[in-house]
Length: 134
Image 1 (tube, rainbow, N blue to C red):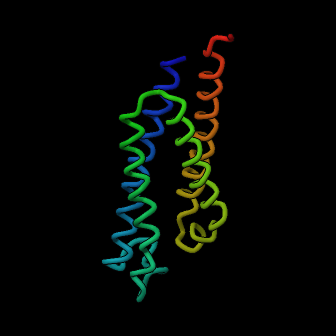
Image 2: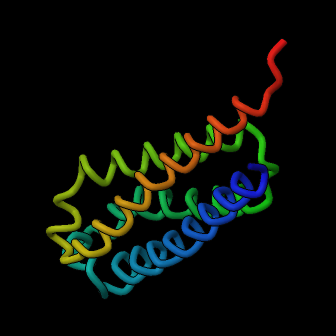
């Protein structure tokens, strides 16, 4: 099960690194160059992108950390909670995907956030079952 837990961390990290890089590219294009799907929302108010850039930047940092992480209980808790937060935010602000014409990205990323919550919960369950009973 250690191999599974390590795989979950690495697959999660790869997803966060790829998705956050794409998100940052779209954020920068929309806020500084009035290009891309966010341009409509940020036209005239580029400072409104601060939350987008912070969220995608932090997701990138978490991706790096998860890539380097040992398969410990604490890292699977971090992974599950991060994806619970990101997936919930996607649901709560679904109109963002509608307004920017990025519904496909919304469906894919939100589904993957749910997938990683489940994957980390399975890893946590595996850790619990590996601990010898006293």
